[in-house]
Length: 117
Image (cartoon, rainbow, N blue to C red; front, side, top):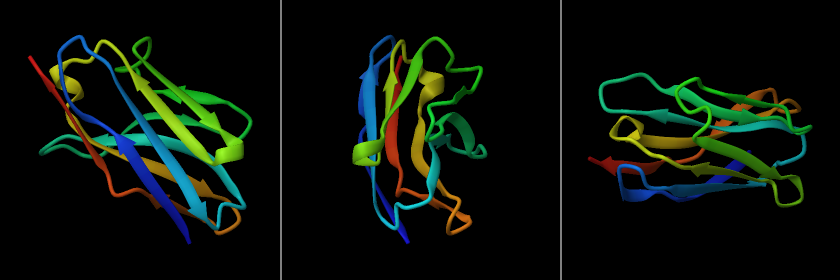
């Protein structure tokens, strides 16, 4: 099993910034991609950004130029720096880790991000 512990998030005004982090522990051998997804009320969970073990990055179009994902492989930790936040970014943000050795994904418990207008 892989445990993912998220931190960060909270309440911020539109135009502000927040940073999220997610540390993996447990069966970290075999973790390839790590990333962030979000789910707003009444909507499906959607991709925000992912980063592979070798640093290949993918962003949702809605966050390109505003969010930055990074990763510290030595700490098995992924980060998400969110700038120029808008109320549309309000959601529960979930950390995800793909373990190719265990052949499954793991999810964090989620952290709330609320952007006020």
